[in-house]
Length: 419
Image (cartoon, rainbow, N blue to C red; front, side, top):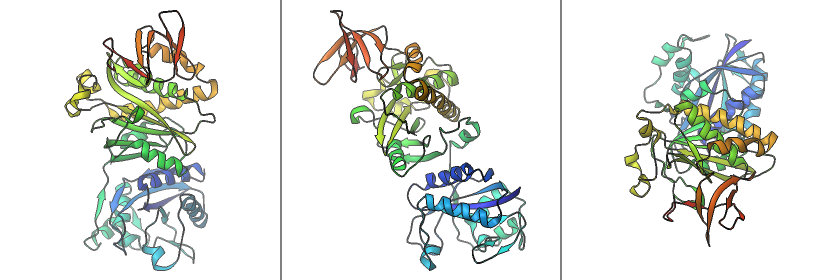
């Protein structure tokens, strides 16, 4: 096998997803294996300044493809991600969704009409040399010598800044086949569900996960505001079930509670219909939305959130896991565990239906076996929470002995206020 170095970049659309999805598709081809990847860098555009900044990274791959076959694979991936190649100056310097280049192919030199290796511009570009040197500090250009020397000879003014990624450790800890592949991290977004919706409508595959440091427009059920300050886990995962069913929410809930319990030892439980709770206080929630033929599973959890940053009206009923435990939580570890449990529980649901999950949901429930008062738009249902069915509806045994099936509603505390 030959080690080749590939440059990836783009400045249109969801830039981070295009990079991660390109890597995923390259590996899924079976024709190469990624052996190293650099950090992601944000760089100013070259040649034309009237366009957004680029995100760039470099990967080292092991492959048996010859250079032209490798180029053909890169171009197929580009096309699949919406790249339309033009000609001339506009194509060379213009914006694009994704750009994949062969930078080096072992020590081989290639000079054909279709391909030149080493890449003819690599020694002039900080956005190539900086990530290359990050993963291969002793690498040399076959003709021009050590890359470190070329880096020092670059003209001044080429701005390259590493994009911080607090979730970088997750990839090395993932043991999944689909969930979190790719993982698309953001700093601050409106809503991870909205980003995931866009990606689903663009054809993103099942398991694509969007995670953010902070949401400015997070939401819960019925459009309610979901406060998402820094320190939490704000996650949305694209699922593409063959048969849409509310029962998929059971799988998401069981996965989230199971992962949190195993990772932290906290007694996290499920409160119907979609809350994660500790000692009756809300730790997190789940929101399922349909989009682009997919189901977007939104999961929000107050991991290391400073409770002082929560609005006064929700502070008393909410809880931060770090505050409960008296120590910070390993967010990357929780995310890796959650994605692993989601893959397992979702697979169980796909193959066995919700019946395969009901016993786990019941064991984790903070609702079943308790007197409840469910607030509906036009009424209130009171009685004993007896069970949930395969679609996640709550079965309430009323005072007259009848069994009432409640599809959605808000559980109220004893005084009648929403809990």
